[in-house]
Image (cartoon, rainbow over all chains, first blue to last red; front, side, top):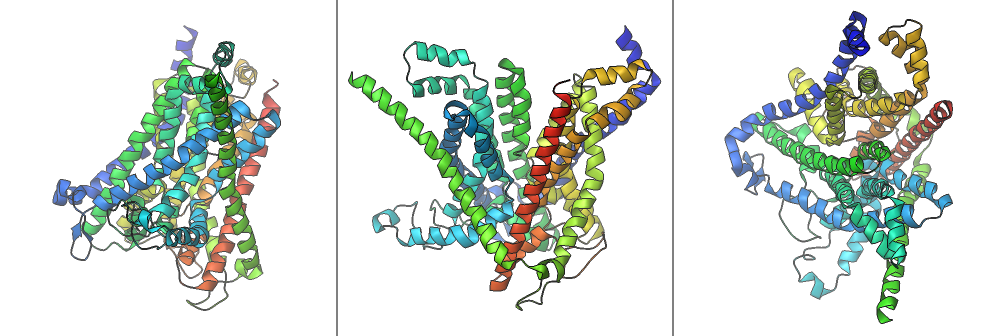
Length: 321
Length: 283
């Protein structure tokens, strides 16, 4: 009764509507992004249809636009990055939450978060001048039996899929590991004690904790995937920017984000611009789906376990620092 | 017996692996910081901050205009992102249980996950295309959009740390809800809001992708918000992929400045959070 009276008071209504209008802005911005990308890419969608994602020739001069190499490059580089980063990120999460002595915990959390704070452009700079020459050396010294496989063929350029996957994996590690750490923290201590009581070794107890936390762990990995898909500068600087579909790690390739970074400012002609926006639209939808799924998984884990986690996980999901 | 030994060996193996994973992740971090500091510091001098870029191919020159431009673009972004983020955060904290607050929170988390390059495409569509030229304002718009969700979520989280007795006291004295929030609760949460702003700044200070085709670049000193403007990050990018030795040197110097700014923002944010917690945790 009191609550009802309170909410119908005029000054209360003004406050609610006034602050609510600002909150509404956030929804409008997200809606606006979707609408604007859809509107700008309409002419490209209309002109090329599904053909756009099924052909490989990207030739703005001849007004030929096939975006398959970009989606290939984005998916291939992100999946490779996950293959490298996931075991490392989970290892870090296990070490910090299960094994590390108390005094070491905080510094380690700080250091892994620092990895997320380094700007993408700095990763790119480091990639070009430090990592790429090292990768080139490795490529030069690849034994010939390995070079005949489809994964290691091609000239040793240094720039290419391998460099991109390495840089991406470093950038993704802090996101996956911080959420995985929070999720592991939410596993009840009794779970581990029970395992030990049954004679489990340390790893077996940890494996049970991982199994208990599996939804959250999958959410953490997907969060990293979402980050990798949209990562732009560092990848643009080391992947070689060549629109081709190749399984070779040594081949210079291209990603959706990279083609936007390189060509958008110079795109002449409406259809060229529209084609680029369509790539942006698809990138937007892909990350939207992956991030939403990831958040739902982390949430569902958090809701059934400890309320404390929900806040922490959501915060980490958004921001590294 | 054999089985037990195997189980124990496996356990040790995994534990060693997890320790190795920590080391493995710290190696690139140390390498990156090492190269940024050593290469940056040798290239960093007063000229870097004071001089304009030298003509193409000529050695020397600095990034004075880019540093100024970064301040302008970041300032423009903060100008609209801070009020929107803070007030939306107030709403989400005050009406925590409502469906609309949940929808806003969802929108904020979604916005947070949108790749920065896509936000750049959006800003291009609404602030560059209609006016037919790149502008500092469009860059500020892109960065501001990236700041809003972060500021909102931190404001919301930290408003909840303010003890309810403060608000109840104000309400009991006859204050309206708006007055209680804006004159009592919000000031008490000020360190928390500062944290949110600093975290948002730390995140966007190093952003390059959304600026390439919004604020673009400019070789000259520009103070106009409706013209293209140079920024530190775009300048580092341009120099890094150029063929000139001296520009590479300056790119490292720029990277060092960026890493320093981002670290300072993070450290101050941490200090503000600690202060906030000292103030209210015990209460």
